[in-house]
Image (cartoon, rainbow, N blue to C red):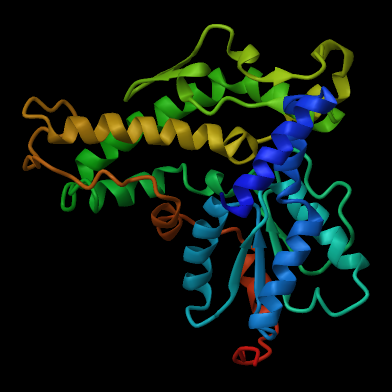
Length: 326
């Protein structure tokens, strides 16, 4: 039996004997990405690459998106990606670095989403970059990105009129989607601002239905977000007014928007390959198209970037080529 399996067995035995069951296991799983564990990982990285730039991200998706953006800004910049497992983990990691009495923080830069809570509770640090939109996904769901996909992956080059017609359908469907998910975003906004834990849906079908030209809300869409404590919006008029002032395209939850884009592109790609196409009449039929339309790295190459990212990257001092330990 491996060491990791022995530890897992010990955790299970201890959880049963202590009577806290799954709660103990969940705490142990969460601790794997706690600041102490992240500090050990960073220390080990520094032992091998003491001079490397380290870019800490919320997760693997952000790592891929920022790689594409940074390559567009400075294609020869070398850094070690360091996913932390979420925004809270990046914040805890940042606090840990601020408290560290050594030089562990040197060359470490952190990249996080704005979300609905901005940098509330973060230390004042010049090494933290935050998106001006809700998340990296909000930069991807746009008519310009759709146009690039239509031109390249869906092979509608030299057919600008057809592309414009399809993009009009995208804008109509996306507008419907943002309207349909407004109550869902309000529920999440209130939860974040009031410090209430929320469990979020990961499947589009839980809160919306999408066609090529429209989108509608699912029944009980608001209940697809489970809250530890229920919130009545009527009790928080100031927060509701603040939410109403947000721009839906840039400030509603990006992962919901990406689920919409994924489904919408799937429908469009299916029609593109159909012998009885509705959207692409007069365009040479393609029996097969590239279906990898929503990888974040590919979308990031097509999207605009956060406007201040170039300035942030330009201010990072390059210490020099990394030298391995030993």
